[in-house]
Length: 269
Length: 269
Image 1 (tube, helix red, strand yellow):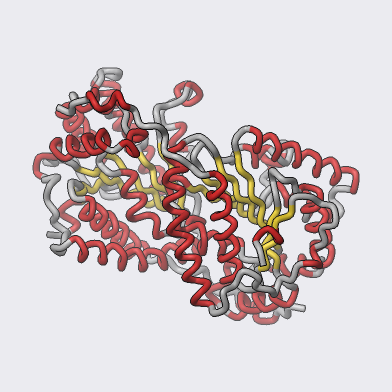
Image 2 (tube, each protein chain N blue to C red):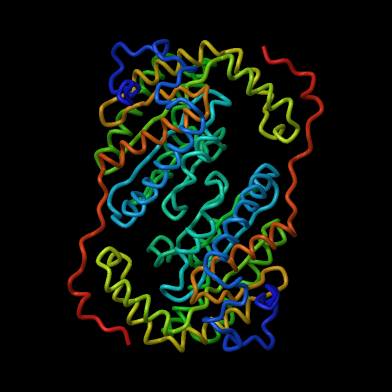
């Protein structure tokens, strides 16, 4: 199967049910093979980032979304650790603070977009404002439609001003979430990651899936595509996110800034 | 030689000339041995950071200072890349913007201090405000003395409110800088890193060394020590910074938050 089959560029006919969270379409079989593949891609990405940083011209924004326990943190660790910390920034969005709530919902997000040459990963994002808010009825359908439009316009502006945007939905099954929550409960060293609220939210599983489907359909465009990442397998998830990044850099083709011939005359005393 | 010999906790009797930039006091001999040592420490540090992040209580601030080409970027890449990007943030301070200049010099720095569980690396810092400013006479001795006091008070406050501060002076020789500048000039792919201003600043080598010596002497305290890192050898530099971090975490002894026994009753449906 091809990466493009998981790339959503238009909402028409998009159904989340067409994608299996359990599947491993990009897997080479054994776990070790997939891990070696991530390592190999990482090495190439590292070199690409070096040039992207030196180029100091374009920007890359990767948005990670997914249900609780879907592996957003694990993706950062498993895939993005290969990058030089100098040119990478991870921003984790939590419940908005009073300061943030006193502004529009895009305010805190806009403040964190990547600068030239920088790769920024959003660990959750403005999409929470059309997900949890909608599931709990804090916004009505009219407001949600308005936000979809605002988000499209916001992301289009970022794209037009030099930011490549890649949005990844880490797609896990309800069974897999159960297993991961039970693991957290069973391992005292993971209790700090466990929030009783996660169990309450799990009761809205179906509503969340619907909200994700609608949000993805409403905001997938050729410039700002969504990728549906089957993520029940952590190794497969890492392979696919690494492949997505490989495709991004293969298209961007970063280049070192032109040499400065005038430097040849310089003498260091 | 011992790491403590390079740890400055008081200004009295500190002379930069007592330290050789060319030396490799912590080296095990061959380059490969030192690289393996960094890799081994990195693995341990990675595990420590995981707990430090989970602990979500204390903060770590590492300040990297040094002459142009002293290897600040290289240290980030060589040592800090082993950390999970989720809990690491690198902040590179450039020439202050008009917005920043409209405030006191600690304003932009304070805005970037680490949060609980976070490791932040300052790539340059507020120390520039007692270095370049002083070398060029933009501040007089009285103002410089005031700033030393302000910096001591600022750092003490951070330390007292839970931030471990480690300040590293990457110590290179004038000869080594010459070589590195010539390398940048000779390699077209490194021209983007070359700033003609670096040559102008190099003329003030002696003044900068004096400014560093004074600044270190004035701001080294037991809570906020400076480390003098012989850095003509990049491998040795990485070994020493890694060892400094090992010593920090060995002292901090991060711990997972206590388990929550009440979770045992929970059932995931």
